[in-house]
Image (cartoon, rainbow, N blue to C red; front, side, top):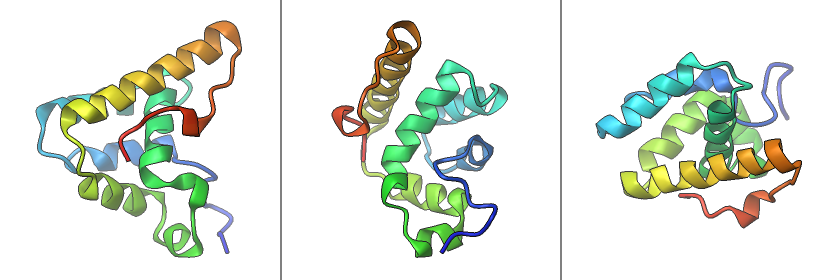
Length: 117
């Protein structure tokens, strides 16, 4: 079903391709900042966590896998109906989950995070 090069979850390499998927400057600035960070940075991990939820990576199908993560994530962001404030709230919640894991080694279930989806 998946090729040898299909990532398991939303890959950091796909972040730059999301730059122009929303019209808001806040989105563009967020994507540009995340794209410059290493994929292991807390902010980057939070963005990836948010995108896993937005893209539905946990329910990836052979169709979506064949499209590839970049195209799938572009479509998901383009079709996202949440306001930029809701998206940034989702990012903040994901950042809190990452911080909680880093500082307290506490795992937060993806379904327990209210992300824009």
